[in-house]
Length: 340
Image (cartoon, rainbow, N blue to C red; front, side, top):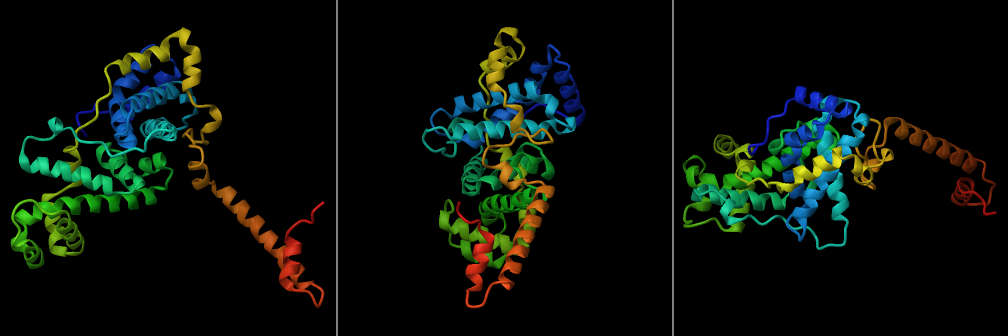
């Protein structure tokens, strides 16, 4: 993690208690603990489109104000970290639906890249590999490896089960590490794998993109190269090469002012999400996303029961259908109400 403050579970519980008591310093403490990492996450979601930096700052502002106003809905204080990321994610989703140009993967500033030529090449390669991943796979990788959430926490942010989040993380990690290993093992691993050596034997200079993809595919299937990849390449080390996005200095004053100034009560109400947009655990429910995927088990059972009941009525009506009529037409008439 790129120099962010260390925040443990006991720190999270303390922050929640301070927010619930409406302590004067609670908003500042919450900002100092989480704002930088939330801003970095927001920038990864919003990409490099025009206005992305301002949208990311607005998303973090509204997420932290919502956290201050709705902390009473969070049933488990130890889940403060994934809760804040979930709030930031839905704030970014709201801004992504605004009529602006589509989000692009953020362009790396050459001044932010490592000075070492080898690390510089890897940093650019990591940036390219992240852009090739699907949205949820990239988020699972960033949340778990860069931001330190476990599979259950990442799943809570993404609206997935812990198993689904772990599967996406595994795919994303393999893709990232195989992509980087193609460059690293082409230099240091030729002697250990004849097939890899044959592919790069006459190579001079940087790897062409097509050859790199062939090498990445080979490394994912080759036991020797997978073992060598584990020695030379790790997703943790690779993501450390990606420069962190830093929030504007004015954001802290803006967040704290909105949270504590009595005259900004209307601004707090406008920024905070309505109570009805949180689920029973206190996590935000993004419109058109979480509600459809996270149907409760009781609702699923009730729906299945209704389906069996309807099917039973239809089958009974079909068996009673008069001779000379199509069973299908009779079944359809039995299932659908008559007009009027």
